[in-house]
Amino acid sequence: MLRVGRFRHRLLEDEFLKNTSPLAHKCLQVFMRLWQSKSLSDAEIAAIYILVFSFLRRPKDFLGGPHNKPLAHLPAHSRMSCQSFYELLQKELPEDLRQAKSLLRFQRPDDLLTYFCSHSWRSIPLSVAQSLMAWESGLYPLRLLSYVPTPKEVLSMQTEGQRCVSMLQDLTEMQEFVEEGRDVLGFIVHDLIHADHFFADPAKARAQIEFSRHLLVVFGFREIQTMLQTDPVFKKEFEYLMSDMNSFPLHLLKTFKAVLLGYFKRREGLAMTAALPEASEAEFQRLFESSLKTWKLPDEAHHAALRLNTPLFQGLDDSLLLHSALLQYQ
Image 1 (tube, rainbow, N blue to C red):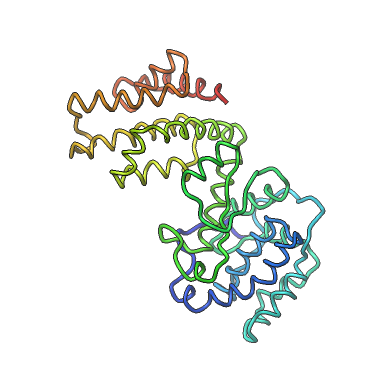
Image 2: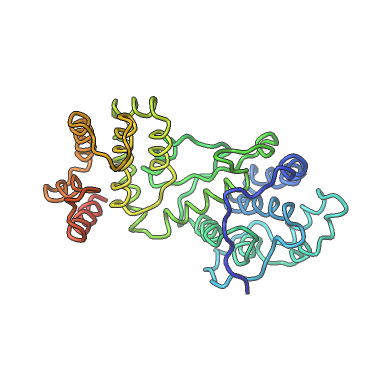
């Protein structure tokens, strides 16, 4: 029994991107055609995508043993067996990889997706398997995309209770870094990890969906748009909050306030520990209070939110008050 895999920001090395990505692209085409003809589900093609890259990346030891944590069984309507996957992939491989001992383990009648999700994969965390199984079962409303969406697109999807999974298919994309140093394998793994963080706890999911709806309104503020265009740091932090941060609404609100404050501190050339000039402090407070109004919090909770990240914050009392108030707006 192996421990759950740990995710690294980057999974494919430069040499792989240059020399092996063409083979990965070639191997995937038969499976892409099956997916496009509806003979494979979105979750199945995502698993196969990860599997092909994982095998070519570490052909000797990409596949581990069963997870320590058993997962629920998938519905009995699988479209591809391990044996079928093995036979289709083997036809596309060069001679030296066709008889890889690790690949021979797929000579079995088991459902491919169930087998994938029940085993440990080098550098692939358990949350990936959990997302794939919940996706296939209809529990996680995920959308498979062939491109990288903008932060606003991700935020808009979240307001509708959805998350996206980007599976890039062009060879040129497979040979390059996608975003923030991630390769195409790291990117799809990253999206599946975030999907599990978003949906695993239903109460947390509902709270994040509601927060996203309010943040989308705030995103449309003229002041926010100006700040996004003039401060690259604010843009990066705000877009992370929009599309890449999973937490309960109280923490998200605290982060939002800190991101706003950081903009004003940078604009004034001040350290985060320094006090803002009176005029800038008033401008910051007006913008934060305008943002808070989209939540329509009860007066006590509204005032507690204004105390966030200040010495006036009343610890556990304010935290419980805000947590309860934010959750009731689901």
